[in-house]
Amino acid sequence: MEWTPDADARLKEIPFFVRPAARKKIEKFAQDQGLSLITVEVYEAAKKQFG
Image (spheres, rainbow, N blue to C red):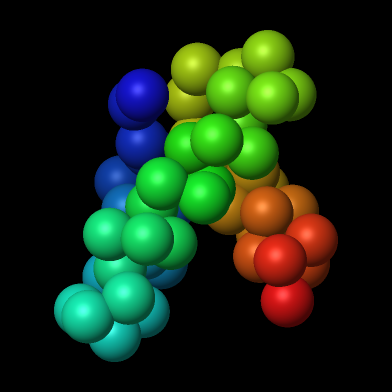
């Protein structure tokens, strides 16, 4: 799964101890949507869904 630099920067705002789990959830969200690129828009949509 590829991440845009902007989306990756947003991910780095998440505390390091939950970052791996957050990355997996966001990538699963994108995969379920049929996407292979994580953009800021995808990141925000996943964040909104997961709260």
